[in-house]
Image (cartoon, rainbow, N blue to C red; front, side, top):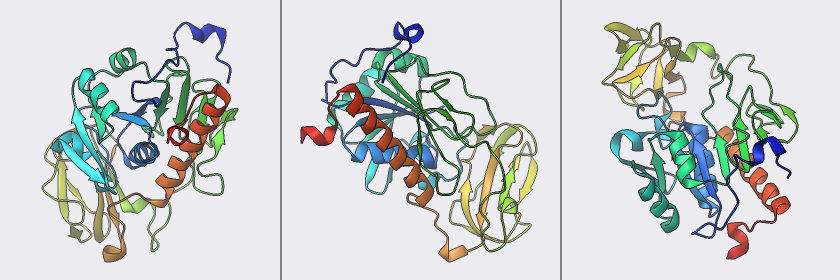
Length: 294
């Protein structure tokens, strides 16, 4: 895969990874980003997650997000730990025992680590992403607003349907549209969004049963009530600052049948798409994948 002449001077060379594998940065710790990191780590790649110090992710039991608040967490047999210094990240990548989550400056991490692959899995659906095509030899963007060959090298489709997880080498992903998937007749009304900016406060936990109209959180002393009855599937962590219209609560009406932890089907299909894209790129670039070294 060719790199434009205008970008070559800013792209770290492939070089030799000290662990023998590609160095991959996954941006974000939400359920999709965590599924990607989990899939790549399990396939033998050296993966670090980069995240802000107080992420607003809601599906925390289906992701590695809680490692940022608690220091360490696990997801389907893989552990992740919060790491502050880049040297400690480099050591963790070599040892390949757990996935390091770095909360420092992103561009400093890129400069010090010189990754061959960057995956933007932050799923910021309503924001136009900055161009990242020059940050690494291979850059991938997940979700709406990414254009393969323009702001990233490869885009991955995240919209539900037959194309979910599709590797896009030219053109854009599907624009954001439609309603969330309906569960027992509930779609958009399963979610609660921040009515104003401020600090999100709650004493409830994911997995708690709640009834419609019950107060379970607040923002700047403004009470937030559950939109429907069911089980809390998604909940932003306590004391996290949020912007207006940020998704902060998700209720699943299926109660005991709801999936509140582990990797979901959609995130896994997206993660498989990312793995396929990287493996195809490796073949074209002439690099050696972890599976080929075993």
